Length: 243
Image (cartoon, rainbow, N blue to C red; front, side, top):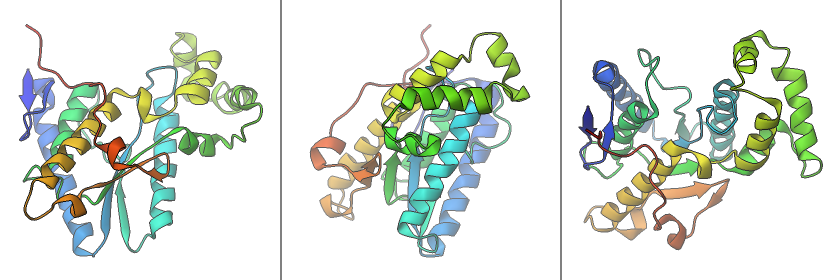
């Protein structure tokens, strides 16, 4: 079925996940309100999680936790909370699609007023964030990734089936994490970029916000320029069901 958010951002979702999505949206909104009550700045981490392109969901989840931790340390844990989708996906969504998840995250990003009022910044993960996890140095990075696969992936029983059916390969792993590990190659992150852009556009026109109170936008550790975060990107999972 087609489900649309308050800002009329629509996804083709599975109705059986409707209640689980609603419950997790409510839970996370309470979590964010609690963090805000402690006086913290609130950030949203946009990070590829799926295995699309040759990566691993398990590895990406671990990387997301590391990035969230590093961003929190950068600004200070007493003053910052980073919402990590890899840790807060909620129960009851096993088998859900990317569109199901994005319908959920879009509602959380928008907030009640469609101004992203729960958040102060959005952090889009990039190549250097992923390189840090694998301790890549800029020299022989492909070979380092091959060795990482041989040492940590190939012997691990949890990856046995994926390797056996060809969905996880040494070359695919190397090429993904060496070339494409970034929001630039993520369906969901493309949508999150456009949502952040839409929120900032709305904030610029809102009396209580204006240019001075837009969401801060970071990519790969660096703040984006106005021309950067005001530009749209290709849609990912957004779209109505096709009959």
